[in-house]
Image 1 (cartoon, rainbow, N blue to C red):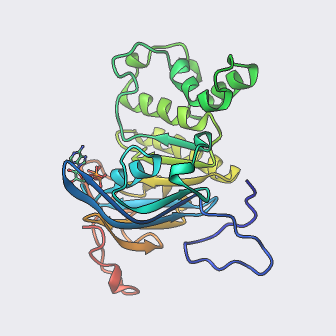
Image 2: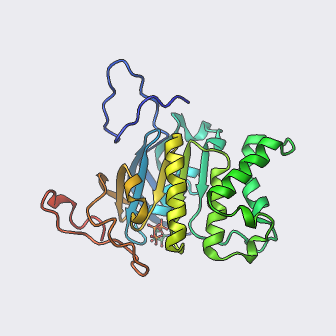
Length: 273
Ligand SMILES: Nc1ncnc2c1ncn2[C@@H]1O[C@H](COP(=O)(O)OP(=O)(O)OP(=O)(O)O)[C@@H](O)[C@H]1O
C-alpha cells in the first residue's frame, strides 16, 4: 500500500493531484448489542493511513466494543465497516492488522514460551509453511523492541502482568502491521515500561503504521496522538484534537478522564465524564 500523504483527520482535503489512499478503518453508523443491550448506538470512526487515533471515554462507554467490531470479534447489527477500502465481509488481509487485546493473561492456562506466543503473530505471513529465518528474525526484533528478548525461552505463565502485556504487544508487532489496534496497552504497566512502549509505538508510527488506541488517558503517548475520538454511552461525543485534560490524569486509580474547563472551546467540556 502506498502511503503518500499523512492526513490529519477524517475531513482532510486531498491536495490537488495527490491520490488519497483509502482509510485503513472506516466505521459508519455502527450499531452493536451485547447481552441484548445496545452498546454502540451509531459510532462513526475513521483512521487514515499513518494516523494515530485515541479512542477515549468513561468506563462502559463502548471503547472496547468498538475495536472488537473492527477486528470482527463483535458483530455489527447495523452500519458498515471497511478495512483498507474493502468491505468487512470481503476483507481477508488480516496480516495487515495487529491487535493487542485489553489486559488479559497471555498464558491463558496453556503452557507456552514467550517466543511461541510471539511467533503466533507471524501465522498470517508464513501461512502453513515452516518458520523461516526471516520469521525468526522478526520474532527476535519484536521481542527486542519491547525489551523481552532475554526472556524468549521462559514460560509466559512465569511473567508479571506487565511483562505479559509486552509479549502481547510484541505478538502484534511481529507481522509489521499497517494497522495496529491496542486496547489499553498501558494498563497495569509501570512507568519505565510505559516509556519503552511509547518508544516502540513511535518507531511503528515512523515506519508508517496507523494506530488505533483505546486509552483512559494519553500519558506518555500524548505526543504521538493525531486525533481523539471520545465515546459517551455508545455515541461519539467528540472527534478532533485530544480534549484538554485527557493527558493529565495518568494516575493509577483514575477510571476515567475528567472534563476540564477550556476557554477556547466550551463545547469540549464534559466530553469525557
Ligand atoms: N459480554 C458482554 N455482555 C453484556 N454486556 C457487555 C459485555 N461486554 C461489555 N458489555 C457492556 O457493554 C458496555 C460497553 O463495554 P465496553 O467494554 O465496550 O466499554 P469500555 O468503554 O471499553 O469500558 P472500560 O473503559 O471499562 O474498558 C458496558 O456497559 C458493558 O457492561
